Length: 228
Image (cartoon, rainbow, N blue to C red; front, side, top):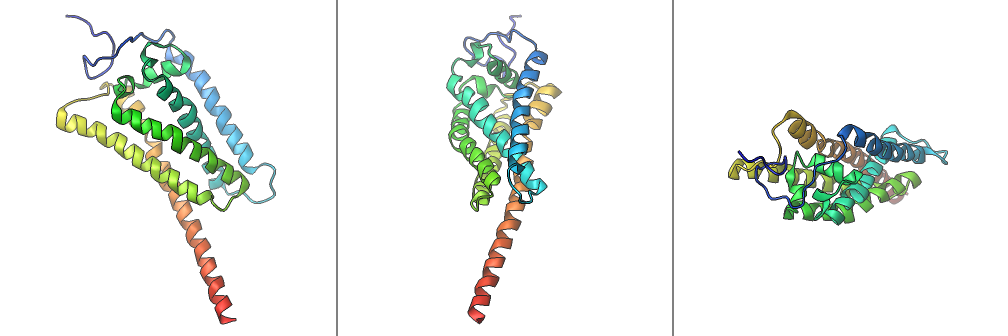
């Protein structure tokens, strides 16, 4: 029996110019982890440095989260959008990581229309807005929660569509884009995307409480002024 030219599902899907990664994943992860670590440490430091105001733990967490999102959206996903037609035949650090992740979702190597559209919006809209949110947290800008709500809702909507389209293809057309092994489906596909289905809810709850508190104080002030 003829062996497939690549390890991706569905079997037989066309992936042009594919070449295997030339180094094991264990060699690529430390470099990528170092980049993410630098982003996180910088965000935690900047969120509370140079100011005498009290910084809530959730504000530090939000700065960390949106800095991570900004880096992944602009740098990592931006790399994918720029090289999407050639990435299957490349062996740079980011290309190898994308080819590894694509074992859980081959749409990233076939220029799937939905995937390309969602990633393009993510790169040019949600990435910069994530970084802007970090800046607003750093400066305690009044518009911080406006941007936080927008990005969180966008993340929830995006991850819902991402999961739903894959599920629908498998449910109605019996097409699976993910290899069935535990690592690829449950760790890569489900696990790596799950934070974008959980963290936005937590940050939206915080934004809700802060916005309600601010408007309640405003209403009380207006009522007080009317009584005077």
